[in-house]
Image (cartoon, rainbow, N blue to C red):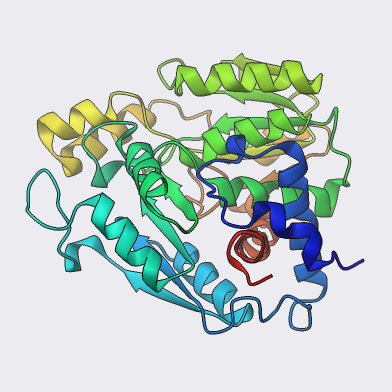
Length: 350
């Protein structure tokens, strides 16, 4: 059933920096519209809601699928996504003079209907600085600010994850177990996708198990939010350091490498390249931490997921990633649909 536009106005103008900022009802509204867009991709009534409107994409860090999916989303809603890089703009920073965030946010608000910002660990000086920048833009802009992935959260990936799970495991995921498991790898991943996954799934009632080798702890404030989410949704949230315990009974397995909390200090002291080299050396010690067919056999015939890009045969074997229970590509496609939904709800003409 198509949702009338008049029933969607309460999200108009809203920022999306993390799904934790939205109510469960608002998250469900976005997911419902995303499924509509998937089913009626080129003939939905909202397909012209961004007609002649511009969405700014602000990339402090590069991307492939994020840029592709947002440009496609804007186009399919009748609008235009403009690619921007801070290095080609005169913006004030700790190292250069230029336009302040306050001024830039207000000026860009006169040109566009929304701003997406992508800023990860290699573009900042300390953990949390990316989050601070997004919230500073949100405070000063009069149009929605959305995160296209920053150092703490990746809300669109979290929404896409849930859409993919519901597509395969059913709309009601309450009581189903998702294993969020660290995987060895050479890409030195940010925390954002993992932390967003933990937040949204604990919020929506899944039983969440986080498994990683000691030394790979995530943000303690985010972990506390997950514990509170689980208590509120009458689900469970647990942290384990044992793979047997993690895979046992899992309905969904999400393998992903992430860096240690020491990465920022290493980068400050030794530079980005040396910091990554040290992280890879640490990760290489954990040979068992790769999702294999044997580990998947210990699950409840689980679906395998990954937000991409996949570090094949490090985080997960090809046999699993390309196997019949892999939903990697469906989750990747879901990014397009959830981005269209959020853009329509928060930026579209009503």
